[in-house]
Length: 203
Image (cartoon, rainbow, N blue to C red; front, side):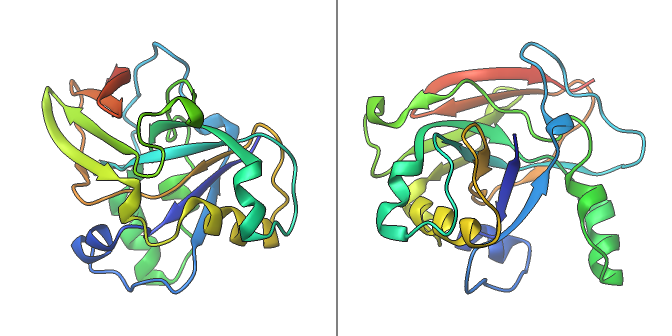
Protein backbone atom coordinates (compact mmCIF):
# COMPACT_ATOMS: atom_id res chain seq x y z
CA UNK A 1 0.00 0.00 0.00
CA UNK A 2 1.27 3.44 -0.94
CA UNK A 3 0.17 6.73 0.57
CA UNK A 4 0.54 9.43 -2.06
CA UNK A 5 0.02 13.08 -1.11
CA UNK A 6 -0.64 16.03 -3.40
CA UNK A 7 0.59 19.44 -2.28
CA UNK A 8 -0.55 22.97 -3.12
CA UNK A 9 -3.88 21.98 -4.68
CA UNK A 10 -6.05 24.80 -3.32
CA UNK A 11 -5.33 28.39 -4.34
CA UNK A 12 -6.17 29.93 -0.96
CA UNK A 13 -3.82 27.51 0.80
CA UNK A 14 -1.02 28.29 -1.66
CA UNK A 15 -1.48 31.97 -0.83
CA UNK A 16 -1.65 31.51 2.94
CA UNK A 17 1.76 29.80 2.93
CA UNK A 18 3.16 32.22 0.34
CA UNK A 19 4.09 29.41 -2.05
CA UNK A 20 4.38 29.44 -5.83
CA UNK A 21 1.32 28.30 -7.79
CA UNK A 22 2.03 24.86 -9.34
CA UNK A 23 1.55 24.25 -13.05
CA UNK A 24 1.06 20.50 -12.59
CA UNK A 25 0.27 18.29 -9.58
CA UNK A 26 3.18 17.98 -7.19
CA UNK A 27 3.26 14.91 -4.98
CA UNK A 28 5.24 13.10 -2.33
CA UNK A 29 4.77 9.84 -0.42
CA UNK A 30 4.34 8.61 3.11
CA UNK A 31 5.09 5.05 4.31
CA UNK A 32 2.52 2.69 5.80
CA UNK A 33 3.91 3.53 9.23
CA UNK A 34 2.25 6.95 8.78
CA UNK A 35 -1.14 5.30 9.38
CA UNK A 36 -2.87 5.79 12.73
CA UNK A 37 -4.94 2.85 13.98
CA UNK A 38 -8.66 3.55 14.57
CA UNK A 39 -9.30 4.69 18.11
CA UNK A 40 -5.67 5.61 18.74
CA UNK A 41 -4.42 9.07 19.69
CA UNK A 42 -1.76 10.93 17.73
CA UNK A 43 1.51 10.94 19.71
CA UNK A 44 3.10 14.37 19.46
CA UNK A 45 6.68 13.70 18.25
CA UNK A 46 9.66 14.88 20.26
CA UNK A 47 11.55 16.13 17.18
CA UNK A 48 9.21 19.03 16.37
CA UNK A 49 7.73 22.00 18.18
CA UNK A 50 5.30 22.98 15.40
CA UNK A 51 3.03 20.20 14.13
CA UNK A 52 0.35 21.45 11.72
CA UNK A 53 -2.86 19.76 10.59
CA UNK A 54 -3.84 19.74 6.90
CA UNK A 55 -7.33 18.32 6.29
CA UNK A 56 -7.72 16.53 2.96
CA UNK A 57 -9.98 14.33 0.87
CA UNK A 58 -8.42 10.89 0.42
CA UNK A 59 -9.10 8.70 -2.63
CA UNK A 60 -9.08 4.89 -2.58
CA UNK A 61 -7.50 3.28 -5.65
CA UNK A 62 -9.62 0.32 -6.77
CA UNK A 63 -7.51 -1.19 -9.55
CA UNK A 64 -3.94 -1.20 -10.76
CA UNK A 65 -2.92 1.18 -13.51
CA UNK A 66 0.05 2.87 -15.14
CA UNK A 67 0.11 5.94 -17.42
CA UNK A 68 -3.65 6.32 -17.03
CA UNK A 69 -5.45 8.58 -19.49
CA UNK A 70 -7.30 11.41 -17.75
CA UNK A 71 -10.51 10.49 -19.61
CA UNK A 72 -10.57 7.04 -17.99
CA UNK A 73 -9.06 7.99 -14.62
CA UNK A 74 -12.39 7.79 -12.79
CA UNK A 75 -12.35 4.01 -13.32
CA UNK A 76 -9.37 3.72 -10.97
CA UNK A 77 -10.90 5.13 -7.76
CA UNK A 78 -14.19 4.20 -6.17
CA UNK A 79 -14.32 5.56 -2.63
CA UNK A 80 -13.30 8.57 -0.60
CA UNK A 81 -12.73 9.65 2.97
CA UNK A 82 -11.15 12.52 4.86
CA UNK A 83 -7.77 12.52 6.55
CA UNK A 84 -4.99 14.64 8.00
CA UNK A 85 -1.59 15.24 6.44
CA UNK A 86 0.33 16.10 9.61
CA UNK A 87 3.34 18.29 8.90
CA UNK A 88 6.28 19.24 11.10
CA UNK A 89 6.27 22.81 9.83
CA UNK A 90 9.46 23.83 11.62
CA UNK A 91 11.35 20.94 10.04
CA UNK A 92 9.77 21.58 6.65
CA UNK A 93 10.81 25.23 6.68
CA UNK A 94 14.34 24.23 7.63
CA UNK A 95 14.47 21.69 4.79
CA UNK A 96 13.10 24.18 2.26
CA UNK A 97 15.65 26.79 3.29
CA UNK A 98 18.49 24.33 2.68
CA UNK A 99 17.00 22.83 -0.49
CA UNK A 100 16.62 19.44 1.20
CA UNK A 101 13.81 16.87 0.72
CA UNK A 102 10.81 17.14 3.08
CA UNK A 103 10.50 13.50 4.20
CA UNK A 104 11.35 14.13 7.84
CA UNK A 105 8.63 16.78 7.98
CA UNK A 106 5.93 14.77 6.19
CA UNK A 107 6.60 11.02 6.33
CA UNK A 108 7.04 10.45 10.05
CA UNK A 109 5.10 7.79 11.99
CA UNK A 110 1.33 8.36 12.42
CA UNK A 111 1.36 11.44 10.16
CA UNK A 112 -1.49 10.27 7.88
CA UNK A 113 -4.63 9.31 9.83
CA UNK A 114 -7.84 8.90 7.83
CA UNK A 115 -11.35 7.52 8.31
CA UNK A 116 -13.31 4.69 6.75
CA UNK A 117 -13.92 5.00 3.04
CA UNK A 118 -17.33 5.84 1.62
CA UNK A 119 -18.35 4.89 -1.91
CA UNK A 120 -18.34 7.96 -4.12
CA UNK A 121 -21.64 6.87 -5.66
CA UNK A 122 -23.26 7.13 -2.21
CA UNK A 123 -22.33 10.80 -1.76
CA UNK A 124 -25.01 13.47 -1.96
CA UNK A 125 -22.94 15.75 -4.21
CA UNK A 126 -20.03 13.83 -5.77
CA UNK A 127 -19.41 16.72 -8.17
CA UNK A 128 -18.65 19.03 -5.23
CA UNK A 129 -17.64 17.15 -2.10
CA UNK A 130 -17.60 19.15 1.12
CA UNK A 131 -15.30 18.26 3.99
CA UNK A 132 -13.74 19.81 7.05
CA UNK A 133 -12.34 19.56 10.53
CA UNK A 134 -13.23 20.85 13.97
CA UNK A 135 -10.47 21.54 16.46
CA UNK A 136 -11.72 21.40 20.04
CA UNK A 137 -15.29 21.81 18.81
CA UNK A 138 -14.66 24.77 16.47
CA UNK A 139 -14.46 24.68 12.68
CA UNK A 140 -10.93 25.45 11.51
CA UNK A 141 -11.04 24.03 7.98
CA UNK A 142 -13.90 23.61 5.51
CA UNK A 143 -13.33 22.79 1.87
CA UNK A 144 -15.03 21.96 -1.43
CA UNK A 145 -13.60 19.63 -4.05
CA UNK A 146 -14.70 22.14 -6.71
CA UNK A 147 -11.96 24.49 -5.49
CA UNK A 148 -9.11 22.10 -6.27
CA UNK A 149 -6.57 23.39 -8.78
CA UNK A 150 -6.14 19.85 -10.15
CA UNK A 151 -9.11 17.47 -10.30
CA UNK A 152 -9.11 13.88 -9.06
CA UNK A 153 -8.81 12.66 -12.66
CA UNK A 154 -5.88 14.96 -13.42
CA UNK A 155 -4.11 13.81 -10.26
CA UNK A 156 -4.60 10.12 -11.11
CA UNK A 157 -3.35 10.63 -14.66
CA UNK A 158 -0.31 12.66 -13.62
CA UNK A 159 0.83 10.50 -10.71
CA UNK A 160 0.45 7.29 -12.73
CA UNK A 161 2.90 8.57 -15.34
CA UNK A 162 5.65 8.21 -12.75
CA UNK A 163 4.35 5.65 -10.25
CA UNK A 164 2.19 2.59 -10.90
CA UNK A 165 -1.01 2.83 -8.87
CA UNK A 166 -2.01 -0.40 -7.14
CA UNK A 167 -5.35 -1.48 -5.78
CA UNK A 168 -5.53 -0.35 -2.15
CA UNK A 169 -3.28 2.68 -2.55
CA UNK A 170 -4.51 6.00 -1.14
CA UNK A 171 -4.12 9.51 -2.47
CA UNK A 172 -4.39 12.61 -0.27
CA UNK A 173 -5.61 15.32 -2.66
CA UNK A 174 -4.52 18.56 -0.99
CA UNK A 175 -5.71 20.87 1.77
CA UNK A 176 -7.77 24.08 1.67
CA UNK A 177 -6.87 27.18 3.64
CA UNK A 178 -6.96 27.25 7.42
CA UNK A 179 -4.06 24.99 8.36
CA UNK A 180 -2.70 25.48 11.84
CA UNK A 181 -0.99 24.01 14.87
CA UNK A 182 -2.08 21.20 17.14
CA UNK A 183 -1.10 20.84 20.78
CA UNK A 184 -1.16 18.07 23.33
CA UNK A 185 -4.70 17.71 24.65
CA UNK A 186 -6.43 18.85 21.45
CA UNK A 187 -9.38 16.94 19.95
CA UNK A 188 -9.75 16.71 16.15
CA UNK A 189 -13.05 15.79 14.47
CA UNK A 190 -13.21 15.16 10.72
CA UNK A 191 -16.29 15.44 8.52
CA UNK A 192 -17.32 14.38 5.00
CA UNK A 193 -20.45 16.09 3.65
CA UNK A 194 -21.24 17.18 7.23
CA UNK A 195 -21.15 13.53 8.36
CA UNK A 196 -18.70 12.88 11.23
CA UNK A 197 -16.15 10.33 10.01
CA UNK A 198 -13.81 9.95 13.00
CA UNK A 199 -12.12 11.83 15.78
CA UNK A 200 -8.93 11.47 17.79
CA UNK A 201 -6.86 13.29 20.38
CA UNK A 202 -3.29 14.56 20.59
CA UNK A 203 -1.19 13.17 23.39
